[in-house]
Image (cartoon, rainbow, N blue to C red):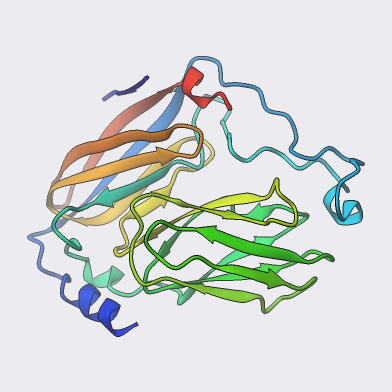
Length: 251
């Protein structure tokens, strides 16, 4: 139950959809758990008999699949613009990503961050801060999959490349340490975010007009599959509170 309250080709695609909108606006909102959130237990407990325990069992590894703030805000939700008509108009400030790469670290046998956004004209630089080896195995629907080893203490790491946006966030796993998972959304525009621990999110510099957004969480799937919003020039549209039934978050 969910309810709403309140590469060269890539460069051509990005440049073809810039600065055409008649104004720009912002949306914001908050995703919260309706009811008592399920309790979680560590994926790995301190001192557990697991592979590479001298690194992986130094302390508890939390279950990042469910991050709930003190007031019930739901973190690690993906909120992204979904367009059936090709790439949206892109604000001049956002035509190019701020960084050519985004970082994914292996840190005490845990992917950091657990949830992330990457544009198709960026790369994910997967590094390893641990004193043991890992692998990074991606499970996309539209891009080529990666399955690469990363040596212990590898600060340079490996790079993951993409050539198109995904329909929904892809899972990233370490097969060596099977509790390690992360989720990444590949998009062909800058209008995608991950909710913070308190459940809040903001997407800025959207082209004015009606747009469809999707909200996705790894335990639920689609929280909202087709959320239509009219973005107004120079205004911030507050979507209010978007509730997720606590029962849908049970693993």
